[in-house]
Length: 193
Ligand code: FES
Image 1: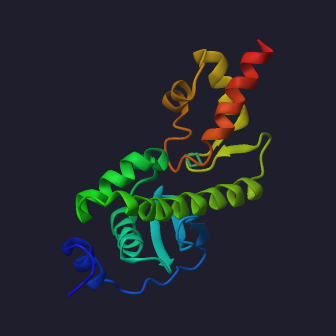
Image 2: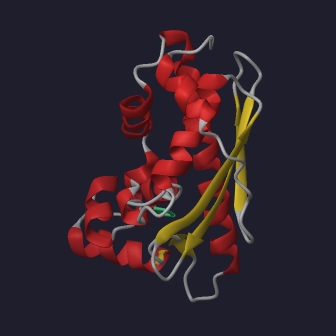
């Protein structure tokens, strides 16, 4: 008999080892509470703007392993525009809809898996931005939005917060790794005005 709740134990029994796909970019996160880690490796189909593949590895408990597995299943093939910034609240709700509510002490196990996913997207954004050749730096690599695009949208829409620019340009609506840069641009524009 498993030490885990039935839905977690069932998910663990379905586990097939995921191989990282070629060209995948990986990110890691660890828990300061238990010391366990999760690593997410992602590849994105830029033309279709979808997540082509996600593979996780973890040395964590069943709650962490099952969280990784559900994220793999649910997000592979998902459109970048449907990621909506990879917020904790949305992803925890998706995990708990499959796995049941996590005990309070185990909620951090799900968050480590989510943080690893965000770390992988953060590295992917950095790599794509560094490769980009253009007149203005690329800020949102999910939707190809440059710094100049954002500055011009700030002017024309009088954007004063992230949501205004997200609505005008789509920047930040995918993995969310560019959000902090977009917020900095808005604040800098306010100081200049
Ligand atoms: S880089 Fe992914 S939403 Fe901007």
